[in-house]
Length: 161
Image (cartoon, rainbow, N blue to C red; front, top):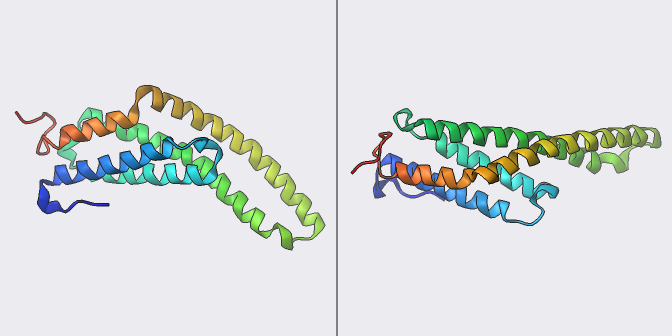
């Protein structure tokens, strides 16, 4: 997953790792019906968080306004993914224990599941709006490009000649 630091500068090391995470994230987005599958959403969230973690290792001197904006947009995606994923996890827990419940408890659980379905639908709509904007703005490509540029800057905000 990581490249040895001996092969270049810290900025190059970070940029290479960000680009690897972006590549994995793009692969997750390429999966059909990613939004409808909790496991696919989990993978998107994991690779979004890994991408952000790698981006955050960028020295402050290299945090151009462009990179700062990309980090903010990625955080918004992660927050939205988290809201949907939290509901999915709670539902998985409930589903795994319903067979052991008495009938009156099962009714309460069913009401809970119905309410979480409504909440998940709302969170999913918000996520879809964010994803549409991200895809329209080509966020992953912009992250990839910004870190390709960083490979050639030695931590400065302007590329070396």
